[in-house]
Length: 113
Image (cartoon, rainbow, N blue to C red):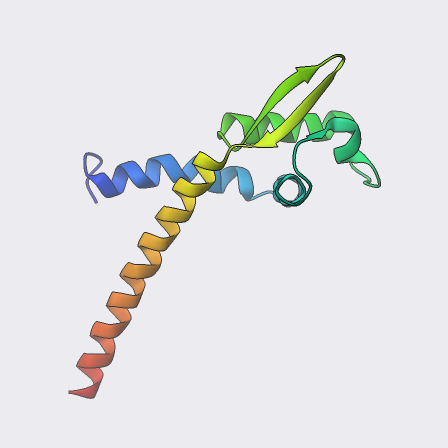
């Protein structure tokens, strides 16, 4: 794959998302935000062994990957998911899955002949 091809651009766009989601804590934060909606650090850390400071650092990594954003409300920051990057990563995974399906179909045809 050439660095100038459309496929390479998809990989370049999806890579930071997958890197950010590769951490168990960050993946759990994304899951929590997707199920519970926008939340403050206080709500995100409630019932967790992870400190507020650690959660903030994880949220900053997710924000750099374009997965979350925050809005200041008084003294709190409210975090929410940014779906555009998630959708782009999902589209990339679908593209890869389709290519694998095509490769497996070709293999099946080859074996059956």
